[in-house]
Image 1 (cartoon, one colour):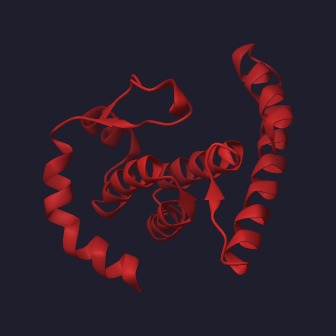
Image 2 (tube, one colour):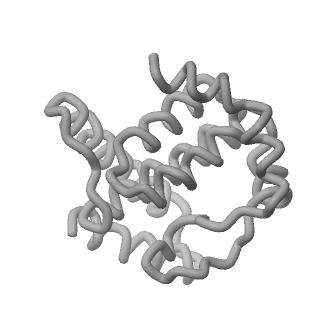
Length: 154
């Protein structure tokens, strides 16, 4: 699987408190390759397939969270929409849509995670992603439904 080897090294470094410079360098390399895949698939009108492209999707999702945490609202929203559109898996599309709602709300990512996300996954198939949300997320769905539909269709 593409980027699996890189992510194994990355996870090992993260779990063992590895060299921070190496961690940042490695994530930069992973992200560069993931963005290249995203751009290529987009140009060819292809999708990111799950689970085949799970590490590409993971890198893009982690970058999305990073950009969001820096309050880069437009870039986070655009990347979130890319994830929703490009992931060829209905469960991931739905989960990523919920995260985009947090960006539309301009809520700090930590607050969004604490307020709306259930950290445990009920399905091991998606262990790399947050897939379960608290019922309170319905408030954001209702509030941003029209905006999301309009912007996503453009």
